[in-house]
Length: 188
Image 1 (cartoon, rainbow, N blue to C red):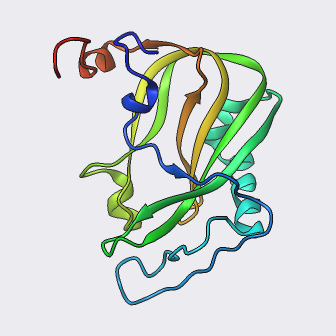
Image 2: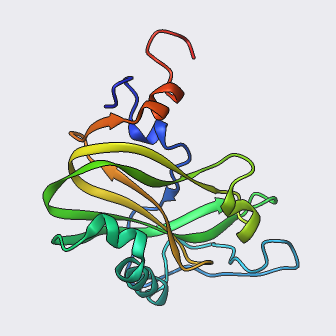
């Protein structure tokens, strides 16, 4: 829990959807049309293809931002699934993947900028990719981090979100972030 009694999922608004049971053989099919989302497949199945999974793992290993959080620590990918958004016609569109990376030992992170995905207006992601999510950063320290949840946008081949994942993670918010988080009992 954060100092203000919120979980990081509330703090870092807009956590992407992750389908469980993903991986292995894909039963996903795609279609395209003449709309603004034509470069993104419409997902009618639930899984990434093997090629997409391999691309996600490759991007994780080569992305500078991800490597700054992972370093030379031992880890395994325990979950890897599709990250989906709804288009203007309420169809599910594949953005990329959300994965859970589990460290062999919990990690402590000093105060730093964490890349985050949110759903609002005016952000970088929405204008450059035609997708509804936006990217931002949140500054905080996190101790006792057993896992990271990482968002990979396959349309731009980039890690766009990283956040701690675990029940016993201890957070220390930056002063700027403390001012943005409502306190308990204020009704905000």
